[in-house]
Image 1: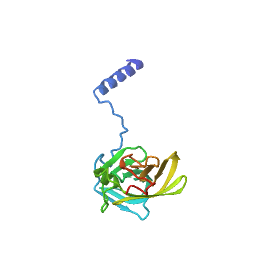
Image 2 (image 1 turned 45 degrees about the vertical axis):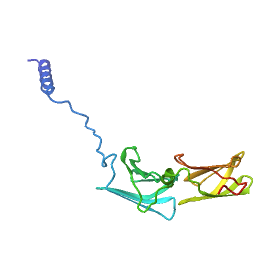
Image 3 (image 1 turned 120 degrees about the vertical axis):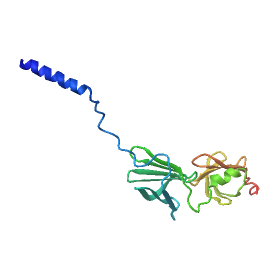
Image 4 (image 1 turned 30 degrees about the vertical axis):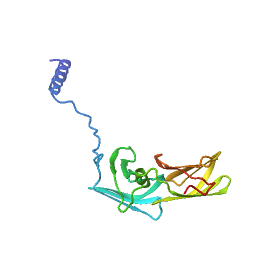
Length: 210
């Protein structure tokens, strides 16, 4: 048999013998997630710090553990990024979202209530949206009004600044206070969600409606 014929026969035999073998799958497989998605971890601890913009957090589930100090990002949202994990906590709703900080893969998405924490302002006022808080406004400059507003555990103590005409606005990171001096209308909303907490009349002309 000629050498060329022998090589051709060998190649045909090898091809035939490999036809019945399964095709090799992609050898690069995604590493399994260490955390199950959309369920609560075994333990979550949160401890508010003296600084109201900080909350200590410790989340543990089997061999997974992440801890540190969450910082207020805006409104009542707190975040922490550490060890490749990002935690986002909405203190108004109690929602905790834990994701891979590099890929955004969701590890956990659940609700947590801080021990000893009273219901949030949004939860309280949702039951009584027509409540009228105690209000004290003092004009300290043409474009500036000092406001002190309180009802139960809700407190706003800050400045309202003229935006245009008779409209004054102020906020403290949690709520936004909007006062129309011309119509004596006061509106207070959640600065993050836009939920209305209060909507009532207050006249500075007669030192308020209360």
